[in-house]
Image 1 (spheres, rainbow, N blue to C red):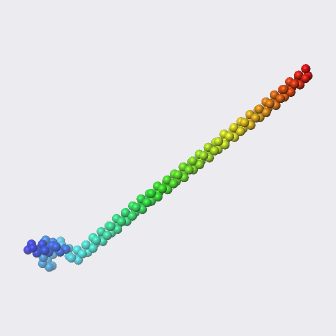
Image 2 (image 1 turned 120 degrees about the vertical axis):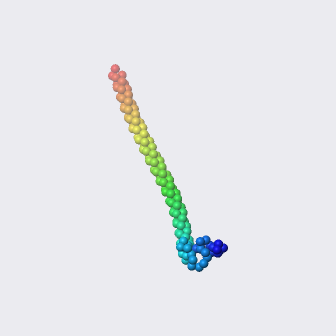
Image 3 (image 1 turned 90 degrees about the vertical axis):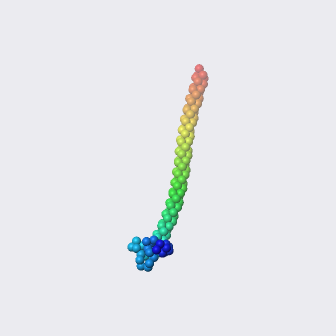
Length: 136
């Protein structure tokens, strides 16, 4: 009767096709032990899925952390490269100034030497002129 089927369908493994009499299950129905085993397997797979989801979450967090570490390292490397470049530029500027100063010194030495030579020539010519005046 339908009332028996309704009350029986509340029990796991029962179906409306079952007439409620013990041992008269259809082939499509799970036995109670099979139902418990399926329920345990489902619960275990749900726990496994949750464990895997947690692991994926942890791995993603680790990945984000590693990416941040890599980005920080790249920033530090860039800063070091900038400092080296700056230092090289300052060294190049210093060397350039040094060469410029050396050129100026050489030029001044040359002018001083030229000036001394001209002074010596003018002194010599003045002496020669004086000697000529005395001779005349």
